Length: 423
Image 1 (tube, rainbow, N blue to C red):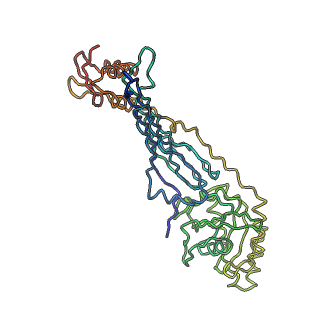
Image 2: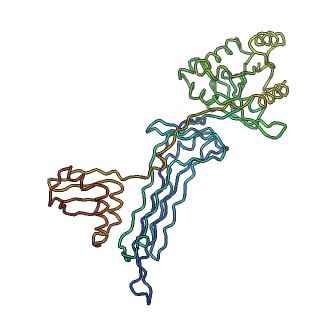
Image 3: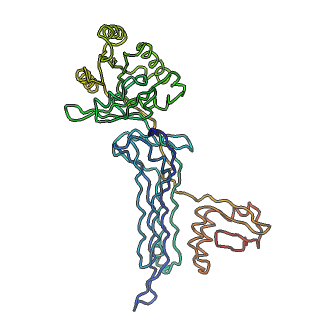
């Protein structure tokens, strides 16, 4: 049995920007060709895209790490590196994206084809041809590319169905869905059969359709989370109205009806107050007197009661005509999920660093930006070293080293670069 997955945790990584290049024009007859190092390409972004054809978060059970492409490094002859491909992750309509870091909702995917940026790729670093000035005609340095963004995100799916089907296990909801729609649910005869909310699309004569979702068998205690309880109740919150399917061949249909409505009340005021059409099902297996008796009894609690048999299709047409009319009359509820501004999606800044002592006379500086700068610095090139020192000064690294207690003559290690410190 396929389990319906309505929550998933995933990790996403946007692409790193490529490093700039240090290169020179080397052409015949051009004496001392100028700088010709191209820029690095930008890293790929990561987006979520709402896809109408997906109904579950099942795919994320098997694959949970998604990475956009890195940008290429710059090349000689002033050629820029290629940008990394953006990554589009498809999610079902009705998916809510949460950032577990701060528990904020950062996206609510309710519009088909809508897309949301969740991790910006890093910018490419500039090549040395970008640093040439009238005074400095032969810049010996380039920039590293920006880092990508790495995030853990939580996805949660709220089904967007127009009509929810309520009812005890075995009330005949799966059969009803298969009769009125294109869906072909597997139907087995034991309580609690439907662990997967079956979705059926019902075609209207006008040509468009509406979605009916079978809400898996509620049992007492569902709203406290017993069984599959409120995981699934959450799905129905966006329905226009409910169809309550009742098996009248059972011993006490009215009691079952009340049980389920009590569960709804415990879970959500909104759901408990949704309009319900009552479908008294399996009339093919009880006599007409009993049908009338139940019909009268349910008429006391609802103005809209229908006697049907999903198995023999008896009275299905008038019942469905009524349902279609209600779909047109009752507007889809506006569901306002408060979406927070997502600053982390574009925060490619990794300029934070830390300093620690390796031994009595050696200090180590670590941090994303500083290590990226060290990586594009050639220690044999005096220009590149000067530039590296200037950037360290602008990041207040020397001040921080002093605070950490460094003394003249001590050694500083940053990535592959080592130098002696003098104030």
